[in-house]
Image (cartoon, rainbow, N blue to C red; front, top):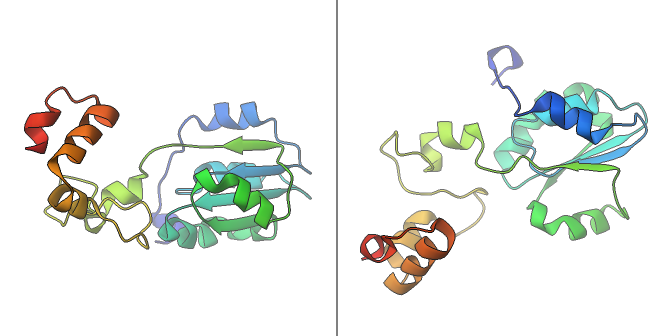
Length: 168
């Protein structure tokens, strides 16, 4: 999608940028790149600094190539899960960063693309993978996992009082 066709308003952008207190020579990490709205604002404030952008979704990283093109000399794109932060920083030979941002949740492109299987708005296979290279889909969980495990998941993570009926 071309920049002129693209519209995205990052969540709490001004507040996030203010809280990061970006130094032009600093090192920052966006652990959930998504549509790169926060990353663009961080990158444009850097002179000699660097920004590490992490996302599980390769489609987000591919789109970021264009969205962050004016600052690509300051940006490192990493295809990984932010829960691997230690390994990511170790792999880049870094001991730490000056600031980090995590905008948690499903991104709009994942919800908007029916083929991703996150939305009930379209008739599409139940997928729900944050990273399309992962093998496990929501369809497999719902249709192949034991009823007791589904009940536990619904109760533990969703606090769903009807977990037994739903899992049944």
